[in-house]
Image (tube, rainbow, N blue to C red):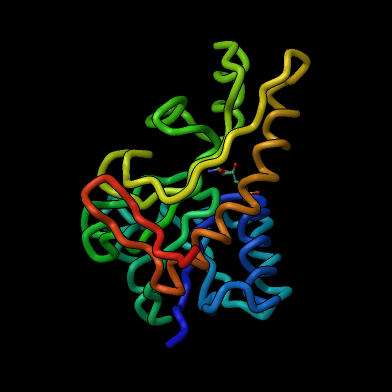
Length: 209
Ligand code: GRF
């Protein structure tokens, strides 16, 4: 049975685009059932519509708590029978009930090598600014499962990029995004193919060599 994927976004949705492309070319054996954004003008919603995918804006201002806002997202996901949730540049915290409902079925992409430059306050360009300022020689991208702590769940895939002396936060962001567009679809493909085995913090990917 093919997985039904729900994608959460807040912005441009270039990672969403990478997922759409990999579904359409048959690399991911799944279907993007719905794209949900917490921002009305997120370009990712347009990307979804162009590919005839249901695109939904849910306005947090209409709910008086994070829990209720998350319940509204959960309702939308359930109505599309979603079995895998992908956070592709979604900049909000998920409620505990959300995480419990989709335990080990929520994938997030983070633009650094976790556990460096992650957690509260590290999002978007801020991650790359912190990397440049610290002067590390390697950064990269991490795809991981989501648990109750920000950027803390079991790691599925990581890949490094070199941080060059001449790099700015913006040039580094572009380099890392290139990797993200490869790693996120690959992790989703593994999930849809049932290749991901989670043992405490460690993830085993069951592919035949
Ligand atoms: C990516 O760098 C992702 O890692 C981070 O937010 C950015 C989203 O970019 N969480 P896009 O919306 O997929 O273009």
